[in-house]
Length: 300
Image (cartoon, one colour):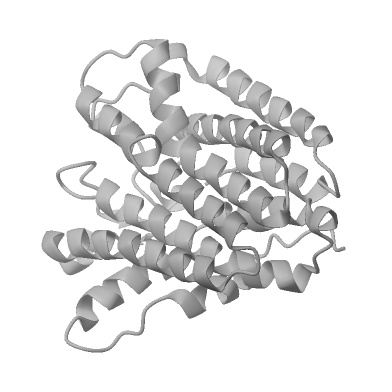
């Protein structure tokens, strides 16, 4: 089995067939949806689905090609949900950002009304894609469990729940407990969910699924802390989006609470904890290790 699949072009090739055709009277919203999904991005979450699942292929004695076929719709669905969250996060009523990945944000290019509709449509399309995958799966029980995880990690017990608290607490001092809650849900939940979905489809048992969830938690919080650091230290040109946006929006972050040096130290600790937990997983985890290091030591 090859060490790595972490190539954006190959991930895009798996996701693209699940995007809607840009036709009909609703063509504009389809264009906005697809443009947002295709607007670059590291494809972190679908990659984690794929690479986590590959660790367990020996459990189900499944070929990588068969697993790829099962995983692809969930990879697409997860990226749609992540993109929906970014579209809404950029809206004037939220962060009011006009630049995302070096290009105009969806609301800035299409208007607020179309951006709201594009985000709504993406999350609903994600569940349509994943639901179809359940009906066509070789193991419907595992596919249904993956769908359950997708829903729980996306909704009020996951990403949207974290975003809700983040919005409500903007401009207010946060405790360490509140900040941890926001980071675990707003950023960590979809990363946890991605690794869990990969493990479930790959054939993991309950204990292994819990282990990858914990790895996802560590990665998610480290990823967000690194994002806080880059917001303070990078440039708009390098990052592809406005810097100092947390300060502009009066948000408490790990950096504003503890300073740059402690933030770097905590991101490193979480990264090492995640790498250490990989030893509990079967199969070749070298690629996952490389991904964790790459994500938590990135420059953009």
